[in-house]
Image: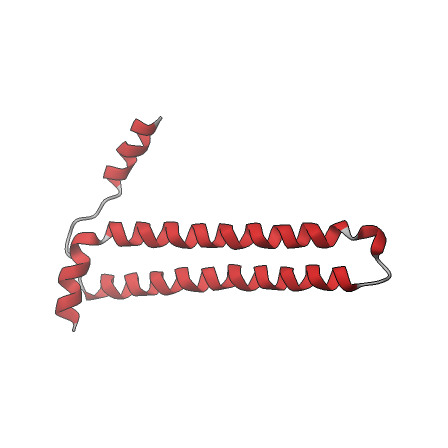
Length: 108
């Protein structure tokens, strides 16, 4: 199974120099990745706030488990967002590894 995964790695590698248009697209992709991570973070924080608010409600003591589920899901969501952010950042960095350094000097 791992051989198949390594086979696909070679197909999706790019060692060509990138031009300015590609460099700008790469920067947009990096910003989109960061924006998506911030959305995961924001959603996780709102879920934490919702879980804490549910804990504080006096009238809903029978369903206190909902607050614990919400708090647990917020932590899971935060780690999923962090994992996806790091994974995509690694893929972007390795995909344009050869052209990124050469274009970075030319653009400045």
